[in-house]
Image (cartoon, rainbow, N blue to C red; front, top):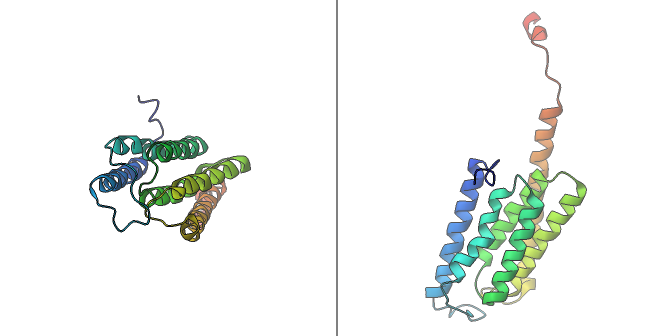
Length: 181
């Protein structure tokens, strides 16, 4: 088990816990809520939607080790959840999760190919989720929030990664220079 969690940092646990708790809350609200205000009626009130939604939120733990795999697993798990349970409200968790994954793609991807695959996976995750989200009338209504949000967080991740890279590549000033001043 320690091999699986190697490289996971405290912030990764916090992010996964927040996403999982929010996901569990929204899934429970899908079950116990009346859904009358939703544009599309909830398709199921099965309690299976709660544990199976963990497959969508928990993979974020591995974002530092292989972010492209994490994005792919998350998108696939979301697709399975949508296919299995159809109309549910998921966007309240999946959109913030997609933003966090877009940041992680910029921050932890090594090659241009990984950046492109990761971003494509984030867009697929958003589209798969929004196509059967009961709280959204049409996908095109949510895309003006989803896509720019992912782009914004990707940009922030690039800025952070560039700053970290500059700090690591800057030559250390010799201590003798400071002593003579």
